[in-house]
Amino acid sequence: MIGNILVGLVALIHAYIVYLEMVLWDTPRGHKTFRLTPEFASASKVLAANQGL
Image (tube, rainbow, N blue to C red; front, side):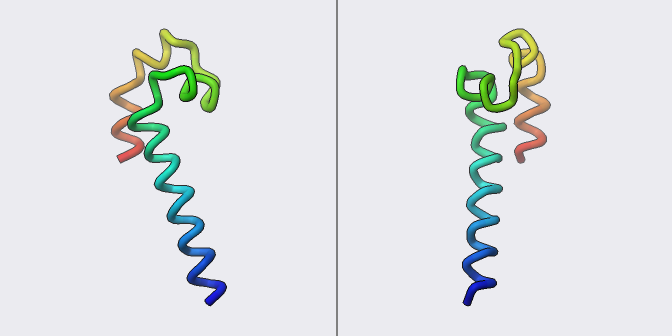
C-alpha cells in the first residue's frame, strides 16, 4: 500500500514537471522555476517541450 502511494506521488511529480516544461516554459513562472532569462526561454522553448514529452 505504501509502495503504491509513493509510486503515485512520483507520477504526480513527473506530470507537474512535464506541465512546467511543455506549457509554462515561456511564462514568468517557468522563468522563475528554471531560472531562465526571457531570451533563453523563447530560444529553447521547442527543446523544452521535446524534453517534457
